[in-house]
Image (cartoon, rainbow over all chains, first blue to last red; front, side):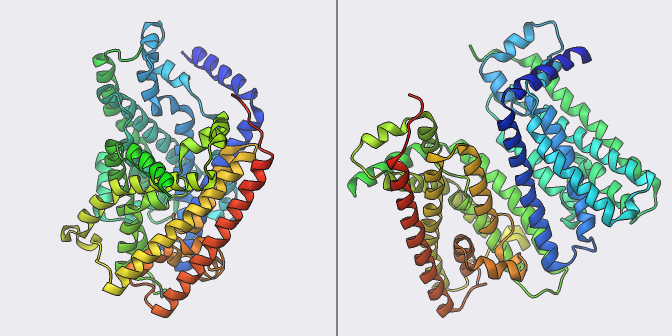
Length: 259
Length: 268
């Protein structure tokens, strides 16, 4: 399994190295886009000082974790995100006849290394954050933040799989799902309790984004000392189940469309 | 003139067919609208900083969502970029029309069609009182409504003349995508696409007043909601809008003529 994925990985790296300049420019472009999101947050804090008691640094932690997690999931799960093309050009028929796991093949069909640009920016922000907020340099806080990043990856990757699974039923691309993927990313730039109560409820009980983004953040910021909050990101694993189920149902129902 | 009208009609009728895409767009617009309203009103209500009121910002955001396709810098005519990269531009050049004007009209038609499909439903739903604190208000006065319409027209022309410069630079640029992304990101951000200009720090607002970005979506929306209400100031603003339109169109046409003299068609 892993060996096959590594082969895919190597192929993608090789094809990428053919267009080095293009890769570098795209990666810079990706970082450039996130810079403006960052600037927007900075401007708002410059004007208003704080939001519900959160400072700029607090929101920055939230922003960078959400962005990094989203970028990692977009890098590796891009095949599911743009699954419509695999269905509509008949590529999926070819995937079905090969004696390798279907998910693995979709996973390997696309790896977007250009997201490295965003990841690099995220790492710079982390370093700056550690310099300005030395209290973050405690083992349990770093572990919590790692959990948060991994949890974010799990949530957004599951959403990409759900989107691909639903494509089996609609055939068309599902722009509506972007509300949850891109929308979730933008929403999670800030601690979720700055929004209305029903937003927090939705992102706790339906789409457990708050479990990876909001509750553990409270622990990192020292707003709670309850250690249980550290492990909240593990709830995100539960979210894989329904998404995987939809995908499985979709594969079962699949009728060829392309040529 | 009839020729350009024909171009307009062609593009408009072509674009107006994408109704399902528009429906998905409206849903997305609503989601982002609610998100921005909650975010900005929380900022405003939690601080005693003197700026735009939260009722005004609600109206601003819905206007922005309704006219999103009109004022989004990235919403441009893809066919024009394609004609540049594929070399189909050569055919266009053989026609006895002014390419600048044709592109201008085509992009205008595209934006009007996309907006026509999205704006009305958003307006209707947001005006309903069932949205509670998220309800959009009517224009603050009849005069404001008139100013709103006038400045909307100038803002649209101003935006189009900026987009024209992006097209023209693409002709000679090595990386068309890079030019497009850079120019539209800067335009989007500084015209208030990500956060409304009244919510930016005062110093940034002062600097932006010397750029064309300040005079695009920022003006009509903030006249509608009453944030800008001084008649004398509005007349002055319209003057500056016209000034920037003249400058940007003159620059765009000059740049176009210059690059057309040495245009190299690649591909065929």
